[in-house]
Image (cartoon, rainbow, N blue to C red):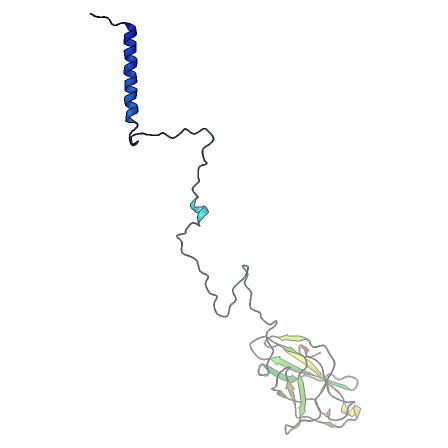
Length: 233
């Protein structure tokens, strides 16, 4: 058996290793398709920040499966409420004005004093509703033929008030004049008295129970006061 020196074996091993490396290098100098290049390692803290995907709520409002609510139109003749409050319809205080067809006229008992004759002219509500009277009624004496007798009464200065009359209630105005026998004025006895409610055109006719009234002159003129609640003093 032939022994190869140790130095010779080490040299052969080095030659074999060099040959293998040369063969591998030769395989890598071709088209380059078989060469894999690994990306360089990144150092800590140099990586670009991760891009966040926007959430659906940030890019667009979430869709709702419930149907859209539409405002219901207000019924005709009404006003849509504002701020949660509903406006009540306006109603005249004490009802509307009394009309001639809803009233009855009468003349109360005379309350004479110091040569003065004082008769209450009364308007009574005969309707089934509450209504109002305000101011002066109209008044005119009539003869038996239906003609005007003397001048219309003058209005005594006063402050009109609104009188609310429920069914069956009344308001009155004072009709005053000097006794013709005391004043010496020309007098006549009316057959009736026409009474017109305030702001109305149609009069009510009532029999006159008071005897002679002055139909001429200024000192003994007939006067009329504003309406007050009740049937007289």
